[in-house]
Length: 252
Image (cartoon, one colour):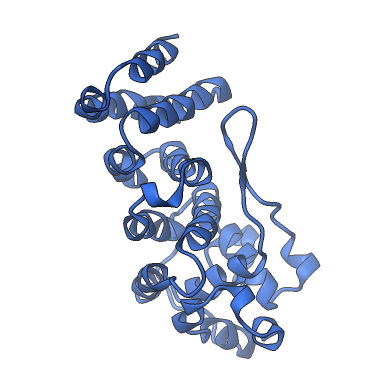
């Protein structure tokens, strides 16, 4: 009820007043993001969306961005989902897309699978918003993350996700509905199409079994030929969207 009241008030105030209360409202929202009740999480997302309409997406996302380092994985995941929902709702011109790359890409290395999946879906939406031939902000963040211990292969995972050409959607309840996550066994372990699935499931490019760990361990990965092929995919491959390249390039 309190969330609904605040949301109604935000829709009735002018932009200047709304912006002056953004941090106050987002501070109120943060602890409620970890609520296990789906109805509460839905109300949180709806209020965040109303706040964006009243103020601006840039201001609200900036206020929420520190939540990607919150101790609660539910808070981290829902924060990324709010960014995704905003991108799917508002015109791209209302965002600082480079700043969003800096929010979403590091979350790909989160210890929790749910957060990694949310981040992968968000990255796909950011790529579409950036547009063909304009992926440099995303490329730079992927390169930066790839250089971190234990993150080798994240660029290949992102490239595989973009190659799926599927985007998440916002459901009738306002929550983000992820694109179907195909089984890595059905696409073939070690295939380009399964790299993103392996990453979401285990925080790796399929070198380890997803069942062995849901954490992102800072240790050397296997150097099997198939692993070297996947990890060897350069971040430069993110310079273009999949549909800009020849079919042979995508398949390789």
